[in-house]
Length: 59
Image 1: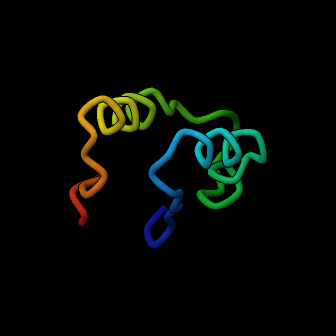
Image 2: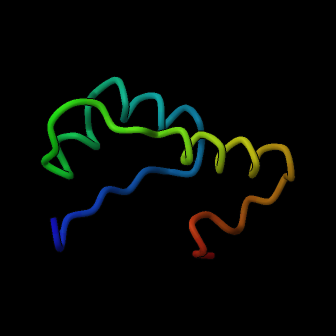
């Protein structure tokens, strides 16, 4: 839906809490679970590279 968005801190713990609390589903007003595979991949990439400055193209 236009104008809908969800933010989460760029770390695995915050993502796990958001998923457990169904925060994305509520914020985005969608039914059922969301595919968060790309988000998990991005967080793992950040952790492995040690780059804490860029997430989703922002600084």
